[in-house]
Amino acid sequence: MAVSSKELGSLDIKKLLIKQSVPASIGILFMSINILIDTIFVGQWIGSLAIAAVSVVLPITFLISSLGMALGIGGSSIISRALGAEDKEKALLTFGNQLMMTILLAVLSVVVGLFYSDEVLLLFGANGAIKEPAKEFFMPVLYGVPFLALSMMGNTVIRAEGKPKFAMMAMIIPAFSNIILDIIFIKFLNLGMFGAALATSISYFMCFAFILWFFIYRSELKPQLKHFLLQQKVVSEISSLGFVTFARQGVVAILSIILNHTLFTYGGEDSVAIYGIISRMLMFALFPILGVTQGFLPIAGYNYGAKLYARVNESITTSIKWAAFLATIIFVVILVFASSIVTIFTTDAKIIAETPNALRIIFAASPIIAIQLIGAAYFQAAGKAIPALLLTLTKQGFFLIPLVLVLPNYYGIFGVWISFPIADILATLVTAFFLRREMKRELV
Image (cartoon, rainbow, N blue to C red; front, side, top):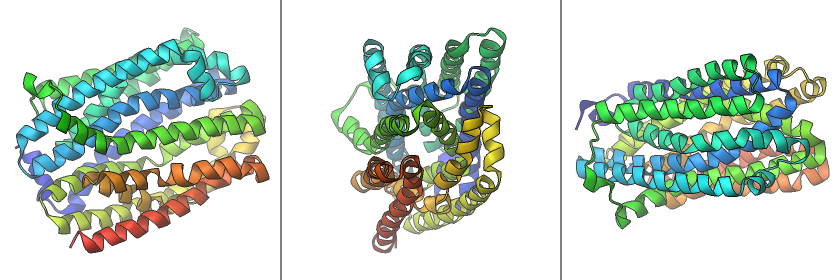
């Protein structure tokens, strides 16, 4: 086993978390910048309606590609623990099965998307004037989704090997290529929504090409043909842990459907565009917290597999402290600069007037979300699929969706915005209870 993966069980936790989290954070930052600038270009060069269209389409493509992320995170939990227990054969078998499962499911999903594109777009909220630009963006992006799914799967395996810098590069490359191609296709060639979609699909392929190069030339996992043959036990273990991630993305997709329809009902296309801006800011602003969470996963998984429970305990407390500190800084920045942020995306006066207050409300509970994210991630890293699933679904599934369905009936659009911090607070309280109990009972 390479020295890089052994370090997960020997380096000082604080140094190790920095080593794992900083590259992950930078990678997520560039991915978020990519999506953010994409939205800015679309909003400034095509119009606010285009932002609404992208907001409808991206949850669909992310749902399909999240199959790769789910299989990647589920398999990577097994790989981290297998490397910790020095079981190289299990790690190789898991990786081979991950790859085959991702290819099969991604291609099947794309075929379904092609045959039922109108129905899918309508389901996700392509109402009124949003429908045509959404369809124009959806079709080219759909062809690139298998490459995105394979990239998401491969990226988590790279981290499980203890090579976060390569995982970071895999996220930076498509960000740069997408931004450059956006400028060429939208600004200079005037290809509109089709150009934005084409740039996105090509960037997905660029990411896949880099990850393929890594596994051929730099990875310590060199599977043979026998490792690619699907085995029921391995598939079941990957699926049970991966289902946690896919269930979360599935719930996010359901939330997107409910949000888009609710926003359109109470505020029309403008409200869908407003949330389109806010959702991009959520992805962008929370990048360091998500980076800490990604950095935490292989550390916790490896040390849990090696039965070094004191190190697992330390990694939990350290990760929560750092992530909470970063989240507080982000909240203050959003609070102060909300109005300036919104003007970057659009020149539409109504959207500029209404978005800042909604942005502040949605970010109101962000200082405490670290507990919920790290807590759910621990149970996944430890291979405890059921509690990981339940805690992962707590915010969006158990709290946010019911709140979004109920509160707008009484408070209109404000009811949508206030649902987010309420769900954050409730989910954090639930996760804190179960995480504290686990640390006292198991990690001693």
